[in-house]
Length: 262
Image (cartoon, rainbow, N blue to C red; front, side):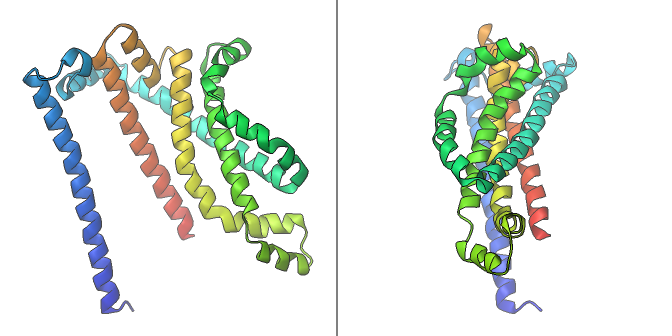
């Protein structure tokens, strides 16, 4: 039975969420309207900054030429593959480092160095080794997402409550018991939340890879548009990228919330 105070609190929270969402949407619409008006009255140069109406025309043109969804799905496939593989690699390597403390200490500075390096520098090497294809894009994305995943999960595992670990040890539990019954369950929420960061890292890696080698995808649209000085195409690619980011983030957030309920 929910008390009246609790009901009032929940009702207030719901109103606050609706109000925040309203202003978020309002800001977006105002931005689009002001952008369009500035372009219509020639206050801004549409050759450089385009306009919402020109971007919409470009999207319609891509749709009519059957190129819109092929570019979107190409990038989406690469992101999903990179996201799944990156998290699996991150979990496996972080688990190995937790079980082997000496190995963790040895590799720790190298992981930090690799994470700090600009991954685009590895682009030419990846292309030479793997070829100018989708595999190169996925490897580029994995270089970014998996390292971040390893560092995050390794930190979560290291910071597990030492008192709980001691209790399991006193009860005769071995390392496997500690890891699978304490370390993973107690950090599950953190691991799930880190997926939100990982998806953004996958976007960065995939788009970076598409800039280098792809002949299809949203990154290719942006890169090709910049080469022919077609800012409508460049900004269309950016808008598509933003929309895809929002959609994937909301999907992952929804999945995470459902998993946490169980």
